[in-house]
Image 1 (cartoon, rainbow, N blue to C red):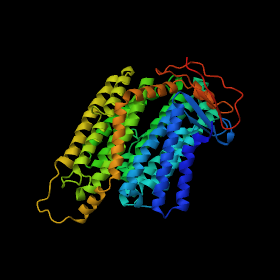
Image 2: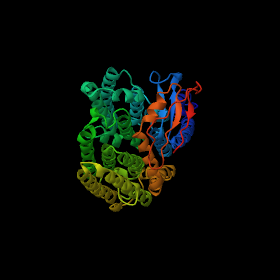
Image 3: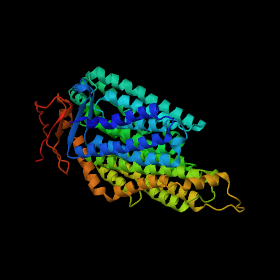
Image 4: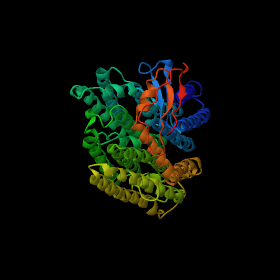
Length: 549
């Protein structure tokens, strides 16, 4: 292979540095290069996703050092799916930031945005646990800068809380990595999979502790109860495009759980018994309950949307906790859906805040907002998607999770929690819509328009923010219409995850090859990992293809 695999990480990193050094005082230049760079990353993501769609596992050896001694990047179906999801989300979010003027309200928005993309994409593509920690820290630094963009005491306080909780997670991550290295002598994920499987159960106390610590770290990133405290204030106080981009951040935690606990700590290992059915599933269900109660009890629209993100993560991880191919398929579908739904709602909250005057996003009756019919229609579509009502993708995602839960011993708890939680969410979103849009009234002594109203009308004249929100809603509709093909792709992704022999084989091959795994459309896989060819060239990889039976 060539250097295409590292470009989605390298491009935003170099672009961010260039924007800081060359164009820090030229906003228009920053906007042009930032949009162009994000579109280029999207094109690279599409190419990598297409390359991995037939089961190919691609490896990039940094410095041409072979695994497990060198740093490797790995692109398989799951990682390329998440990279594509990130780059797809980034485009409308960036356009909204430009159209609404958020990028002009503080310094260095576009460099930080690009560094954020670098960190997220790097976390998805890395094949090394320590470099996963490194990319987590890149995420933390860039996201803190984005959170306090435009200033304000509330935003600074929420950003500080966000950093403190995530630093706690980073500390636990280091403890886990230290324990893993002490027990196995490696941090390469493929090599870990081999070495952890060979540990005798009688000598597995240390690696058990490491597995639990890792699960706690990723639970902090995914905002799972009781490690969710940082999210409501952080997301509700963050600038709207930042909160919308953060819709993918919690999915990084879910991705890491799926990756590490299908590859390194698979459910058939004795040392991981009970982690999911005893700990993760109850925590996920409690997260659903807490999130939906928060939606019902919130006193403002922004807090309501933040709590809906917590509830959606609980539903996603309920599918993960089943830990079957159907459960992971359902969780991945719901991850894609909830990312677009949450992002659209955060952007709509900002539109409501900018056009509603003194009442802003509180549940107080206020005069009608400018362009209220269009905003109300968009809010209605996004709300029924997040609440899981038919016919949109949220309903399909919940059906997939409920179907996957039939194999769980906690099936009735899963069904009851999700169905009751969905009902509570419907009531909460209906209350918000009725107060903000339906009960709006004109003041009795309407005089000349004040400054706030004129500002709202000038913002309403910009069509780019509404186009951005419309694009996210169109993605939700497209995900609904194409639910069948998308589910088949995700089913093949789950099959590859539960049969990691090819992943391990290609990563640990000396020259770093690409191997086609041989998965058919039903998710079946050949049991034997393909043998590596010794005649590969010594660049950064070559390709070896194994035909489907």
